[in-house]
Each structure stands twice: as C-alpha cells, then as structure tokens.
Image 1 (cartoon, helix red, strand yellow):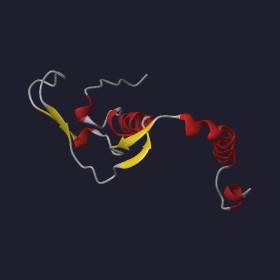
Image 2 (image 1 turned 45 degrees about the vertical axis):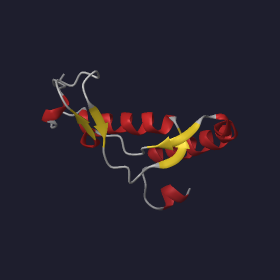
Image 3 (image 1 turned 180 degrees about the vertical axis):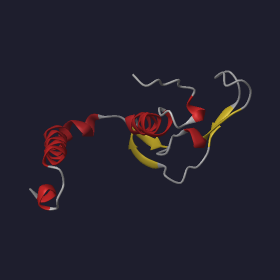
Length: 102
C-alpha cells in the first residue's frame, strides 16, 4: 500500500512486497550462512590483472572502502549484479559480449 500510495506502479510494488515477505519468511535461516569479511564492491573497475587475464597471472582487488563482515555469498551476489547491470550491455565496449538485436 505504501508504495502504490506514493505513485509507484502497482505490479512492481507487488513484486517488492512479495520479495520482502519472502525475505522475512526465510530470515531465520540466514543466521546459519557462513560469514566473513567481504569486499562489498566487486566490479570490473576494482579488479587489476597483469598479463593476458589468465588467473595464473597476477591479479588483485582495489577499493576496500565497502568491506564489511557479512555473509560470504554477498560478494558473489554483488559481483553478479555488477555484471548484469554494467557489463552485459551493448553500450559497454569493455564487456566482450556481442549482443545482437533480435
């Protein structure tokens, strides 16, 4: 109700509410997930590679300003989100993806 009362699209507001309900229903299980100090900002601009990009070459990660103690899976999720949002687009020449209009 709050989102639709603010003028948000009703279908999208329903998705947000369902996501919140799903989170609340499962939140007790989160206590069992392994935790660690996480980088918190894995994206292409924060990874350095030397050589041809092979993982046997030297590599490193910059920008630890968002590091937190949290669930280890968060770094995977954050990195995947950056890939989806910033790299997998036709506009991003760095992506290496060849996307064609279908």
